[in-house]
Image 1: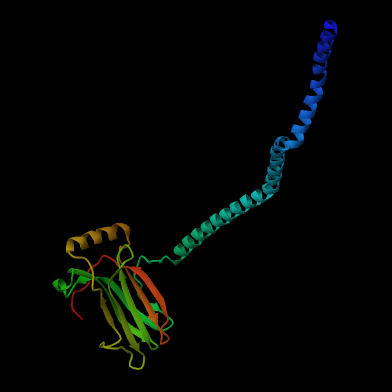
Image 2 (image 1 turned 180 degrees about the vertical axis):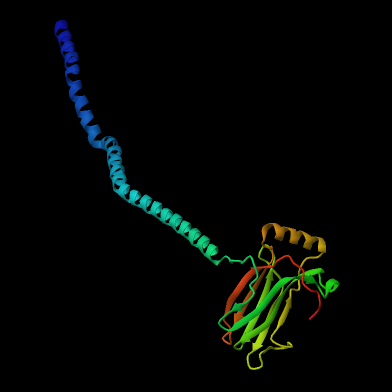
Length: 247
């Protein structure tokens, strides 16, 4: 009997290990079935990685196109700016006044003809009445004028091209061969601004003698009845003193 019991115990204990692998397998299968998230959680990162790679591959051509487009716009803008700069520079160069070194003796335009022109400086008849006072001012004299009905305008400028004094405009009447509000067809045109002392004028004369071109200039323009102005001449005012008689 004891031997039988022992044998039963031994047989019973021997059967337990044989049943464990089956139970483990069943438990593993049950765990797999009951908790499928474990397997899916391992698959999802790989799928997400594939999706991201596909998105990157899909976006790469678009990104390249966008970069190319932005670069093209920047390049076109740069070219446009360079072109604008060159055009502006050329326009400025072409529009720059060409100033003659000597005053003309005679001028003939499409409306007026000016004869025996003389240009220089003389003492201002207003002197201290001007603000600031100009002791000596540029002057242009025209001995004779002929032509059709129209207008003559004279503008004085300093060495930097700034207008000095008031523009002088005269109306010419061909029927009477005179300028309106004048005594005849001759003119003496004084600037209302000039040099404020004779020392400055002495420096002006020295500079003019050395360079043969004075720093101030006079612009003469004409216009017909249509009001369209055209330039007759632009010339430097020589550093010589004219008569100071007030005509």
